[in-house]
Length: 261
View 1 (tube, one colour):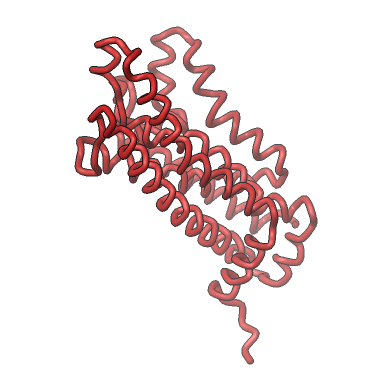
View 2 (tube, one colour):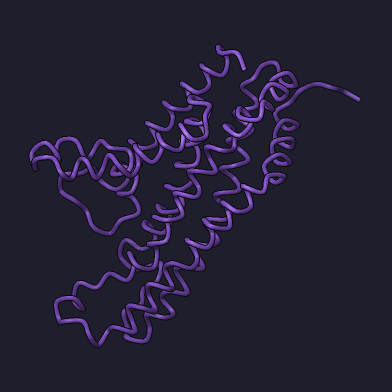
C-alpha cells in the first residue's frame, strides 16, 4: 500500500481530528443554536409587542434584519473554533506530530481550512434556512413576512452564511500566525468587535474615513439591509474582507513553512 502523503489523506486526518474534539461539538452547537434560534426568538418577541409599536416603528420595521440577526452571535463561536482548529495543536504539542507526518507542511493548513470551511458552510446554510423560514412564519401574524425573492433578502441570506465561512478562514489563519489560543481569540475580538466601537467614538470625519476599511464593517455590509453611504457597497465590502482573509492566509502559510513547530 502506498504511503504517499496526499491532500485527500491529510484532509481525512483533519476531519477525524476536528470531530474528536469536544470543543468542536460545543462551538458548533452554540453557532447553530445562535443562527437557527435567535431569529425566531426575536421574531416572536417583536410580534408579541407589535401593538405597542408606534406608527413610525411599524413603517420602519425590518423583518429581514431580525430573521437573520443570529449570525452576529454565531460568528463569535465560528471564529473561536476557527482559531482552535490549529492553535489547540500548538498548545498540546500535537502540531509537531502533524508536521512530521506531512513534511511539506502546507497541506496541513489547506486541509484544516477545507474541512472547517466545509463543515461551517453546510451547518450555517442549514441553520440560516431554518431561521429565515421560521422567523417569517412568525411574522405572518402581522403580515410583515418576506420571501427569499423580497428586495435584498437573498443577498442578506447568502451574505450572512458567506461572511461566517470567511470569518472561520480568517480566524484559522490568525491561529496559525499567533499560535496561542488566548492570543488569537483576543486578536479576533479586538479586530472584529472592539475596533468598530473605537471607530464610532472618533470624530465623525475621522470615523467616516476609517470605518469602511475595518474588517468587521466591510465584511458585514453584505449581510445588512441598511447601507451606510460612507461605507463600501455590499459586495465591495465583502471583497475587501476576503482580501484581508487572503492576506492572513498567505502570511500564515509563509510562517508555517519557515518557523519551527
